[in-house]
Image (cartoon, rainbow, N blue to C red; front, side):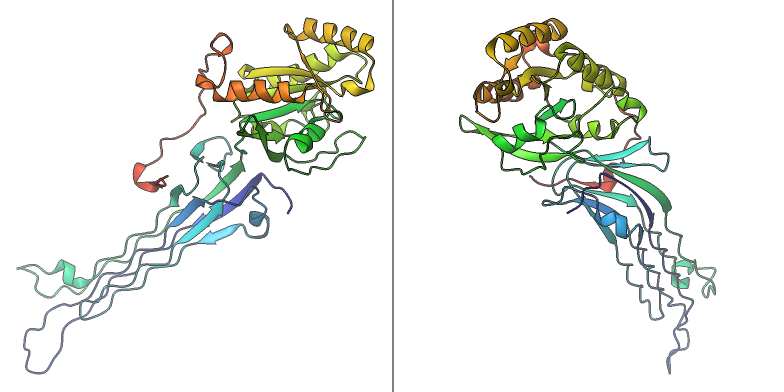
Length: 359
């Protein structure tokens, strides 16, 4: 299945059905009076999160979604049927934005959550509705109201507990494949990973979700390489595992390059708890490792973890520290918890438009 994390779709809710103009005409009934029924409501457009999806690829092949028009009212006080609604099935973690792709409408981060993004038009009143003591035979009815029409953006941000960041070929995919059952593509050339991958890691009987994203290079925030668009998939994580390969000539520069890109991207990622690790230590001797670990410590300001996904050395220690951060209150040790004050632009969602799951 191909990965797609952003899609633009056109939606339109159904128009309301028109009210009917009708009069009761039966034998031996002299004063039948008006009996035109009301029109039915137009179909709503809903978006719902479902389990088993992790891509928006379906919206590449269908971008238009329209609710059905309500049935018109009929004589004998018969109300028209409501129009059939339309539901967009999306993965958990999908955000809905206005056409400007900046104004957040709703963030769907729980399975089974539903949100109405376009309300169907109300049906028109039939002439029976307008009957009064002074107007016993109204000969008019309301047309149905038009439905809502808009273009929205769907943006997926994967939900994971920990995210892997680093330069290309830092060993992120190898780490993910070693500690989870995920099978990302692994090769000895830059940008082997072209889209995010998820896996469930287990340590000491505890499980947590890891997200691996394509590597960052200098200038990624300006579109160099694959760019930084995939950083959105680690925005929801509680901790970042920053990998620096022992094969790098200048490990300190490799670390600061990625940190600069994280800070340039913003959105609170630069404030997340960060675990720094020197990966691929099986390719260097002990003296070289000691020198590079010292250089990396100077660059990041803390003692880095050392591990090799090939030999398994140091892997358990890294997994345990990730788990400790994830399960701790607030997602980070008290001395490292940053104060998050930044809030996304959004409009308040109408509570009547949201149906939360019972879970």
